Length: 424
Image 1 (spheres, rainbow, N blue to C red):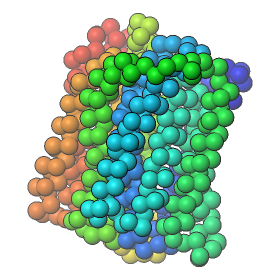
Image 2 (cartoon, helix red, strand yellow):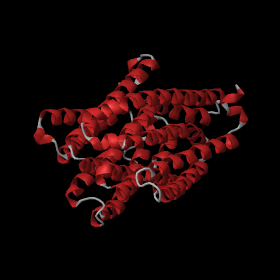
Image 3 (tube, rainbow, N blue to C red):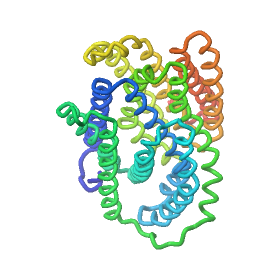
Image 4 (cartoon, one colour):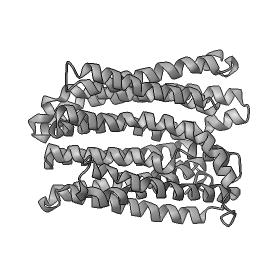
């Protein structure tokens, strides 16, 4: 299943990888549109709140420790990965005991309804474990396996429940959507566990290295603060939008945000998952030529894919919304270009982000993310005096613009000239 075993060109793997991610995205597209068609806008909004809360809580359970452990894994042969992975699992166990009870406050404070609490915690744990498995296969240069797991946990179940909802009116409820999500997560978990067992990884019986964990936390804590700040934008925006516009209009926002965010999924599948490990290795090995090449490819592919995505989505959005036969979505379609622009800015910001991360310039990343939250809050607060509908989208665009400008400036300041693509 991995590249070495199948002995086929890398381009074929990239094509299959993109196809799997494309199927995942297609399934999620179909699901979000059928949710918008079959469910009340308020239910679509609630689905968006649950998904956003889970997405944010993932970083509390993982603490972005992978940013440290991935570098450590890439320095070692896979046969020596067991001790690292076991220590990381021990840290996650501690984080579970701390944060799972605290997340119950979401329901105590009324931010989410109690009837969804069981599904929330089940899906959160499944998503976290599967996310870490996905990262292990990416670090092992097995993006195809990673994409298969991603398809199971994020795509296949969405396709099944979407088709089921189209056929059976009895299944047109949020409860069945969350149940299908859980089944997809369990399937990915079982397959990922089988694949991990088949890998030549040793060291599982090593003792948990708490000193190594503490060293990693010193690296990961600043990074997780930056990640939490960045991810706050895609969580707070929904809750703030609900406060300003109501749960029904939030359903439209969730629909448009889901479409726009597909761009990042495409970029992850076709660009970032391939360039990210290679960029780090090139830096660690001091290979300036390879480093410049990866940066150039990262920029070119990001720009081209973003341009194509924008053209297609802007042309297709109104015909697709017409099919939903719900006026509320067409009434607020003017939100979509703003959210699409935010996704493009986010994708472009990842180009200098990965170059800075590979070189170990984590502080620049951290400061840009923290600053973006202030920008988001400030712009949204001011804009809300003039428009309850456009305040949050304007705040999100301003935040990602600030990230792009900050990281780009620091990239040119901190990267040695011999490593800049323009020096070729």
